[in-house]
Image (cartoon, rainbow, N blue to C red; front, side):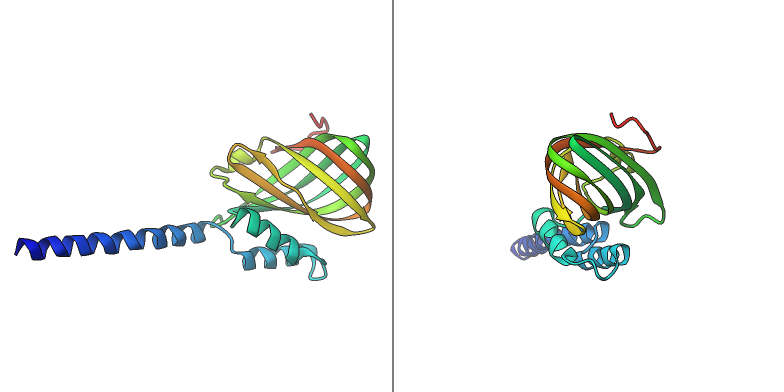
Length: 191
């Protein structure tokens, strides 16, 4: 009788252990966006004609996985060695019924010249608390487009990673390092 009971307990333990990874994956899927959801949101935001968007999103998903938020916004920037970037948008989090207003601004320095205006669709990873978005995020950016194009770069701070996907118009050529400070209110001071 005790052998039978022991075998049942072991079988139940193994079955429960097999379910844990599936349960964790299901919970993660409920708290994050799928690639199809992000691609549909990106196409609505940029318009169905945004060339290269699917390729860029595929690249980011293969690097970083599923995001738990995204920001839809607009920005303008310019540089002659030293640059400035200003933008604003709305943060959307999986499972939240509201969005949060976000502004960003920041300086850059590098071998970079030109100016551009862009629509920005930023994928947000590992954002546990909405207030954690309102910080400085360092990053490296490289641009080489004339008239139009889609590009992405990564910004990281602690566990949070931001992947801004930009589709812009203008003339911009070069590479720079800098940061973007995300805030609740519009600020003129980029520092």
